[in-house]
Image 1 (tube, rainbow, N blue to C red):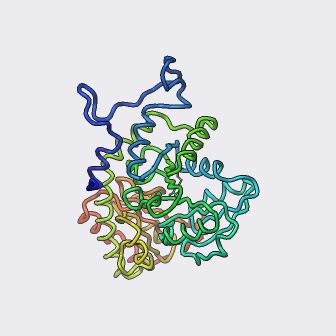
Image 2 (image 1 turned 90 degrees about the vertical axis):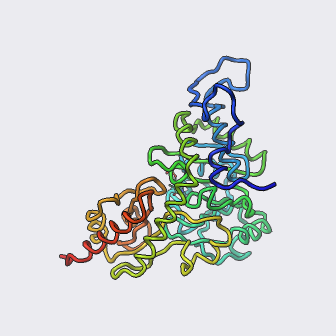
Image 3 (image 1 turned 135 degrees about the horizontal axis):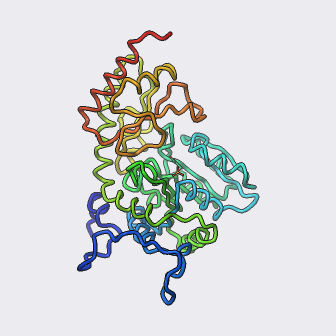
Amino acid sequence: MTEWGDGTRCVHSGSDGPVAGQPFLGGPVLAAPYHLGADDFYGRAGNPTWRALESAIGALDGGLCTVFPSGMAAITTMLRTLLSPGDVLIVPSDGYYLVRTFLAGLDVRVREVPTTGPWTADVVAGARLVLLESPSNPGLDVCDIKAVAELAHAAGALVAVDNTTATPLGQRPLELGADVSVASDTKALAGHSDVLFGHVTVTDEALWQELQRQRTVSGAIPGPFETWMVHRGLGTLDVRLARQAENAEALVAKLRGHEGVATVRWPGSPDDPSYAIASRQMRRFGGVFTFELASAELVTRFVGASALVSAATSFGGLHSTADRRAQWGDPVSEGMVRFSAGLEDSHDLVQDVVGALDRALAVPLQ
Ligand SMILES: *Cc1c(COP(=O)(O)O)cnc(C)c1O
């Protein structure tokens, strides 16, 4: 059977097909209790708007999906579900920092390993769960998910991949051998900078049921309206990613040769350290790249001089944004910028960004 392309899958995944007189995407079902007598009885336990989106994301991820009100709610529920006191958890030392903050309160033994490894049998020995983030945030390093999954499984450990940066179109961790694909859909998947959201997709049905149960008992449930907004955004993920990647590629080419700009990283560049593995295991690249200016002050000047780029954290949205990561405590240089290419016209964006850099760098520092 031929597989539909990404655009087709985004538009049609999760749909039961046309029903006369019904909308293409049914609106959010707003219910606390339901009239008794069918599957749905109370809004904390089940909602048809969740199920529609879970069916869509699950189809893209290749597994059984559970949606959550944020990426952190997805990750922490996954960790609480899989880990018991005393377990060993491996987390990326360069990964999303809140995960480490949350873990400080759990009775699990945490081992930190850089995304680039080294990944050896010793490193994963005794672990219950290996949490990977590839490409990592904000470093954009990658690891060989298939190889790490084989190593981890041989040691009796499960593997979860934070797939936020890639999205289900950029990478399918479950196909690469991971047991869990978890993501913040606040970023590119929802894509409009107006909602927080997250999901966990797994292949094991018992684990899926347990995640659904954990959501019900914890009460960390997404609102139906937010869920519907994410579903609406998902329909255009393919075209949004395509424009974002096109813009990232054009900007990276200009920044690489720019005086005053150092260490430009984008996994989609053939000369990037991540490219060899990324191009093998990823299906396509996104719009997030990083570069370094010499100081925090230069980053402020650059953003101030740009008409199109806003200073904002998060990434993957319609608008181009620049985030100086050191301000959030990431262990990176003061002038390190995570840039999220938006959906502006490439020509406009390149002209604006290069012009803003030229102006920022032209003024002598005090
Ligand atoms: C943003 C992000 C999260 C947290 O997601 P929220 O939706 O903000 O809770 C987790 N992992 C990665 C890689 C992220 O970028």
